[in-house]
Figure 1 (tube, rainbow, N blue to C red):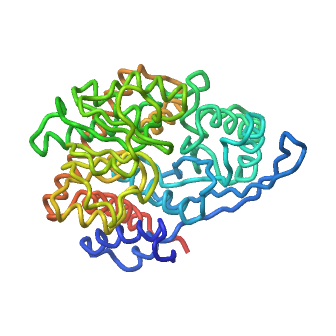
Figure 2: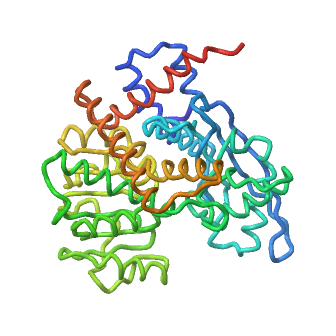
Figure 3: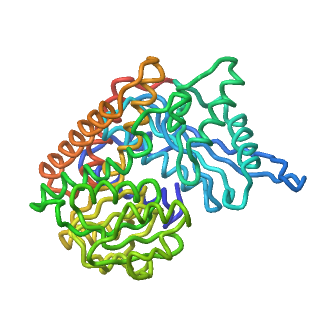
Length: 416
């Protein structure tokens, strides 16, 4: 279904291990390994120089058995249908692990937003929204920010949808500005979830976050916030890398100063609070916790042997290949998979959707308390499943997710 080595193929390999353990019915197996809908659209945009460019956009709704599709939209030159399909599948399992009433979706547009003006980005967003508008809606498919998209992009998306349907619809997207119906705590949610999972995992492994050393790959919204919150818990952030460089300080980096540096320079490179670090050397640092929070396929067979951390918490989607995951598990490294570790974002997106639909909003403290309860509950269920079946946490998370989706699929029956 997907070429060897593809991101979707990696998802299928992860699915297969858990499905075999569950002795999943072959018919259900086929249903749960095929996306419900893959949409490809062309988005013509008049650029600032007067020329017309046509951008290719995707929206994949992988599975909607548990509820509306849910998933972000990314703007990146490397977006492919294979990648978007895999991410939509992971969103399906992520929502199921967290027991959210959502299915999985994902979107993307092939573009380089760093080379586009604000007006060009707005024009692209509005055209992309219009092209997929028949497939989205509060009860159909609820997009959110992802790589290179943010609150402003969601505001344009929401406005375009609202103009088409003839009324203001705040619940068509999540990750919006607070003033437009966004939820308090949403921006920090994914990073906060990573911190909570790291804390619970450390407790399970018999050590405290206080004094624990941490290396973080990727210092954007997820990695930066996770590092900052871990530092508040007493952890020592010793190494950080991003797309342009890295920084290392064995005594600990000042995360607040580093975040300020990144806000100004758009990279951790050049930060004076530590020594320059080659991004390829990050995984080899002697740390307690490693947080890959960049892109897919970062931990591979080639570099898994370098990892010295005893705990890996996946802030990114699909950062570890199946082969690398097996190598780490065999070495006794405790890997918390993406569909559990970075579920904080979609959990608070769910809270935002609920608040928008009710027209009643919660305090940030209420949001964080409910997020904590959801994440801890999900971690405990996956850990118990791992013990019961004597498998790694990734396989356990898939067992939990697939079982929930398969159970509801059987209950609903097949429409023919």
